[in-house]
Length: 630
Image (tube, rainbow, N blue to C red; front, top):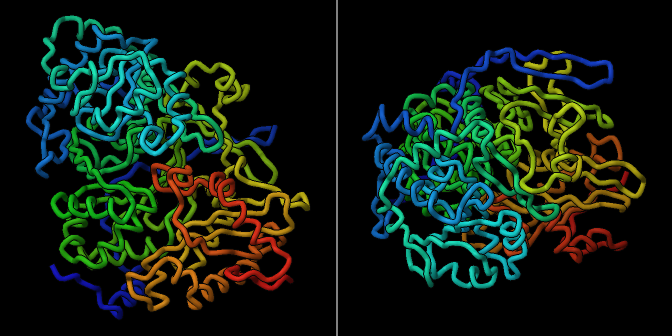
């Protein structure tokens, strides 16, 4: 197909008039927040929307849909020939029973969980559901710990914490070295390329079902541990967050009440987000079987090569909701802008776009609006929220059609939000049936994670969009542990500064790492949006990153953005004096980028000390963009 490029004047007209173009309206939960100000200055928020009942255990809804819609496809993934292998709800339910029977007679039990080291797959999905069905804890560990690491330090830590009785890997050969190095005393199941005495997954599926499965499931309670999900470990070793059966089903009900249009089989996902993280593994995967939807496993990711796989899938399957991280949307927008057929199919059944993990730039928002208008004549709801592994994951959602950047929305029904004064902002804390009881085999971390009233302490700072109207939502105000002090003793709010610079850069800056701890001014390392920068600099699409970094047009726009922010600033902590454009992509092997595609600030600062030091040279340094000191 010949690439289709939107006429430039048409795009500009659409951007100018998009506010006058209506949205494709979809039902969302009412917004009715009660605000209580306490004597100690803390504030309690909770939704007045009645919270509906939810299942006691994870697989109750799976059983329901297997009975109500047995032939409906629940999960699909491309096979070796590129065709979609589809499993119906009835097939999934039957296979879950067989796997559950196998697990009951394996070395896995409540003290020795099931661990998965590889990525998303239909086998992974069935194993997870089977373990939870018979009451055995399940843990999906980031594949990066096995396949991108050289010392396997984080993997060893996770396995030592878990003491798994059974380990699953998709490809035995791919994980052979890893399993030899970590030297685990566990049964190993492989989907292909068996190694040693590993058990083939196809053998597991032949297990005869007995009454043991039903008896084991009958003992599962809302308090039964369903999952152990490890945090990213960006500030230390990963922590094993306990997700109980009730935690998970509660949050799936909270999400479903917020977005009722996903009910009754109306959800179709094409999704790559990793199940070793709560966004992909709890939120997205869980919503599918909870509501009788269909999940097409996308083997892509938010990289140029991974996006090609995603695009190939989206040309065939039209999602009703599309979840992604900002980096994924950035890559996808570039493809949508040059392929009219892809764009029309993508938007043909779409009811909502949803991003998480980081802020979405205004340029990408505008681009998605333009593409939707061009394709279906209406704008699409772009939603987001706030969550964490400890909340399974959702605590707040922003369902407003014209939401402001950084606005996380309002608390979901069934949860109480506590705002504790912290300097000129609030630390946000939560209590509710979706909040984790703590960390696996770590009573010290568990104890320190909750305050004296039992609220989970997030270490994130939020503030009101409107002090007098709690329905207007809460604004992300940075991560308390990410903020730093200049040598003057003044705190720098990383989250706000980063968001402001990205918004002011006219779509050129994709991400920012801020510098300045114990220094006399704030600096920045900038990661650029390749496609936008080449367009602005009028460079060919195959230009190198180094050529883009040297572009006078790009540097000029960034300097102008820094100057505008400085003119709005109120002091050294709100002004970025110097910035340098990264002429490299963040390195996943050095943990500079997470599985979700976001920048790990701490790792970049640790690994790029020489680059940071260049920002603070006394004399003018080539490649450093600087604004005049006032």
